[in-house]
Length: 487
View 1 (tube, helix red, strand yellow):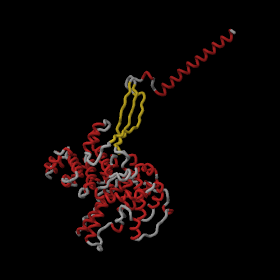
View 2 (tube, rainbow, N blue to C red):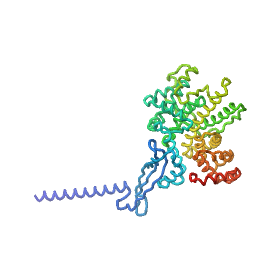
View 3 (cartoon, rainbow, N blue to C red):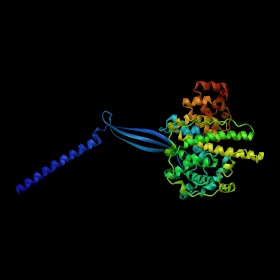
View 4 (cartoon, rainbow, N blue to C red):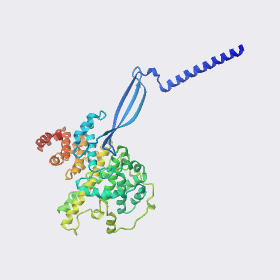
């Protein structure tokens, strides 16, 4: 009995020793793994880092992306442990309407939200302006609207055609991009409708066959049809509205192609105008410079994995057949054979009608292309590449147009670029100040306000201040500043 008692006590001692050693081993291992003891944690520090600002796809709201860093500090304020998490803050603007003062509302948003620095006021104002325009033209679900008052008939046709676009038929729409011009226009048109719905964008961006086909057709055929160019650029524009999809645009070099399209269309407008007025056409010197040598080669651009030879081929199309296929399209009066006005068979009245139609469609294409470039220019490296290719020249050239929606977009872009000295120098050489008095006389309050902000940015340059004074703009500017909308 005594022996059993001694053995039992000895066993308890052994188990106690093992348990104690195991406990300290676990504690020591944890301290090594986490590099901290609970009693060492003296302070906690939280940091919030604001990120990109986007438009909410479904409601009238601004989406602010930001990161939060939480650090646990030791007695000597050394970081013992830290964690980082990405979050989103949704700022709802339910009362936005046609009478909303975008500038005043953007100031209020910046003042209320401590995550948005005052230096980003212009960015917030631009997003609020977009929300305002989207609400005014909310007939199409989730459609980014760039349509002006002159395009209401186009918007009606878009709403009628939206019903025939079905995501389940996407592969058929891609097939159309490998056929004749009329079929390409039809396919691009249907894909554009799908891209207008923000809920489809993520799935579309993952479809490498689709993105490759869109990029290839845009790169190879953009000169052949205004309608085709507009549908394709608008599809990529839908991606440009969200920063997370910018990689899709950059991968296909769509920004560079858009600059070429704008350059070509601006010079083509000069030829149309010369033909219409019966005068000699101006020199056809390109505005944009060649891409910088560091740009990716064409072999780096993703191409479709499906070989072209196996694609179904359509037969030959006569002009009658093309018009029949185009019927119902938003560009039913524009085929490749009608994108000029130098036709001796036309009467003067028909020539005037065609000229106005071409200009209206061209300005729609220009708005979409400029807007896409403005969206992707939030990346400083992309903006620098645009500047090297003379984006300022393309914008200043467009100031001669009369479309208020286009001018608002162009002046917004110039204002964004005007904070860089190299862009200011380019504006000086192109006499941008001489083109702005017309904007200050506009009936559009938004255009006047943006023109004033552009002049404000430019006024920090001595040469431009002298030009502003010489042009006699000071009295007009002072009278406009007395209006509360332009404070």
